[in-house]
Image (cartoon, rainbow, N blue to C red; front, side, top):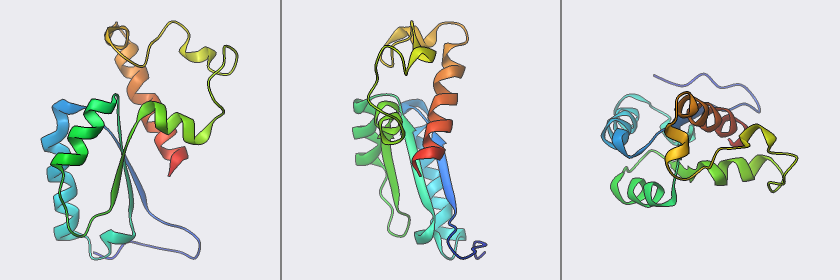
Length: 123
């Protein structure tokens, strides 16, 4: 079906993901090619945790009519805020964007929330 569009507005989709969901993301984007008549006008952003995931997503997902970007969470944050300093990223204090600390209790939810929120701002 045709996407609803108004002057100056666009449709944007943010997909926070990780390597374990690569197949799901591939199928989701493939369905856009089949069912969305103007999918080339939709801005799709996939936000992953690491540069190695970014490379894998970019190499694996091959579509003809769907345009998408794959960015790391750090790149996404960098698009919408100043470079990190001790003061302006205090909400991440004690967490690393790389490695096991994000898998502590509650931290996985924080990471996915950051991917979604900053992904929306980066569209």
